[in-house]
Picture 1 (tube, one colour):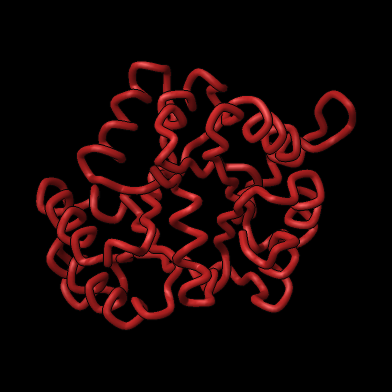
Picture 2: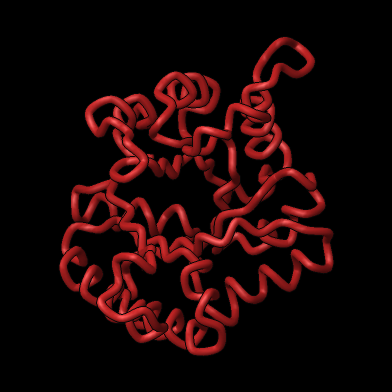
Length: 232
């Protein structure tokens, strides 16, 4: 069976695009402040971008904010996404093993998403439940796009390299070694980090948020992180 990254590559090549469309129904942008308003917002965005999107990234928080109707709206949104377009559930999960097992079931079985964002802070045993299915992908937070990422992620660790490089190496070369089904979240707001992580891991896929409201430069960020083959 094809891996998540096989599916992602096939889609990216089919539409000649690396665009991952975030489905973030911010309260302030909705015509109606409700779960139905969130659904309509995302439905319109999907309809307008489905011919160019390499993937979709629904942010779970904006749906969870509306309680049970929000959970229903998220499931309805997911069903609108064409089957050949990979889905990244942006939930940034990560907890002790048994809790991560439940999070993984929710993302991959209940919601039938292809991949999920995960926090590495609790270590390998917390990430393991997300990585055990070779057909699913995991995006591990490495160097995030928010200004506060420098509070922790750029701290020097043993050997003098920043923590985010240690996370990248540990995740891709140790935790995900069995199935090679991990990618890294490296924000497009930090061009230097993109270059450094790419130099260490030339063939790992990046998810690089930050273009748009967060102010990343489209002409600088993504090109710094693209793989030698022109994808990822």
